[in-house]
Length: 492
Ligand code: HEM
Image 1 (cartoon, rainbow, N blue to C red):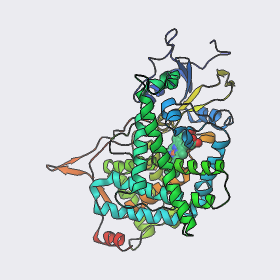
Image 2: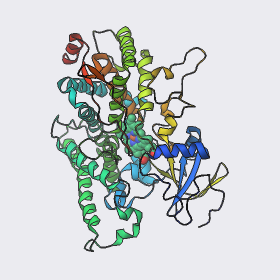
Image 3: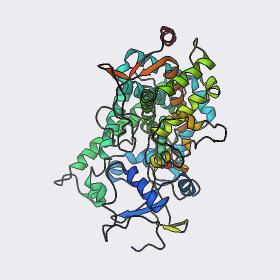
């Protein structure tokens, strides 16, 4: 079909197949950054009749996705990833509309404002302390310790449920479900996502095994959403339910549609926080977004010991060594704040955010954007743009502290949580979790390089590919700064 206006510039492509060979399978953000340099901040490509617009600049993304959010807030339809396996019912894949709004309202009620988050500060502090204890017990299991912390926080806020330290039924169920989601959303994993009519093939038809897989994954997902709901229902009946998203909302006369929306809003909290969207993290490691950020933090401290020393000096001066830092200290710790910003920038968690689609034809900046176009924001490119962040691959918290004649560089939150009506609903919770875990870790631990045969090993920052990106496994040594800090952890 001929476009009804001038398309944004982009690679020329082939007749008929258009840009199908230009679309990279791996590290897409790198290719997108090159397009940005070559064609400008708004680039267009198309493949098999699907238009894709890539945004390479924070302002361009904000002009389109924030300012015109009423039409740029839909999501593409995934056949295997969403329709057949039921994941379409979670927020991240829900089409723009009434259900979407209701889910977001529910989530907002527990984590959408500073006031809600402040009410939960105690929980973040307690869980950050639990985290320190886990690290003390098993310093070698850093990724697993971080994952448990993020999971425990989200399950408590969502269902008022505190998971067991090992082999927790709900946690295991979510893990299986997320593992399945990662598998079905790997690029080109299922033919049916390239040729949607295949979904109508009956399941007994030879070659239609994907339908059986879909049915089994569908069941896992239903269990993941239903079982913790039943836990809360029982607690309510017994008059024992602590406040949580589900308990606060279920405790009324709900219609079945309302109950359904509570169930899926809750399931989206966990699977959003616990990384539904990771197509890269198959196998045993399934870090959440928050996990990815914290893992980056440990990686940064291992490579850049001077950042750790400066942060420790600040904490020692402000908090002293007789107690652990709390949220009440946050405003007095500007270097730690800058370090948290740098973790969110340097260790970009969601390189391309999630795709938005546009619900009506638009003329934007003089370009024609057709209804149904997929819009991707190259967040990793934006956060490593040398014009905005000089020496973008260096970990330098100082860049976020204004000094004489030099303003602070742009806050990574301008793009790292996405845009418009789809902006990450967990951003305040993520911010508080990351801050609490970072400040407490710096206060009590030294992160050091591993020494092998007298030689210090400096890890290379390597990141996994996929919707959620996290540092690949690296070696470091985490130990208490002193007997006094160790006692401080154990005293609580
Ligand atoms: C450092 C941590 C995190 C980062 C960097 C992050 C980033 C993002 C980004 C970039 C998006 C896509 C936004 C868009 O489409 O424009 C997103 C969506 C989402 N995030 Fe987060 N996130 C984080 C933590 C969390 C947490 C802790 C939760 C849950 C408690 C969460 C729940 C979600 C959900 C449910 C969506 C889908 C929203 C929708 O489709 O409307 N995220 N996040």
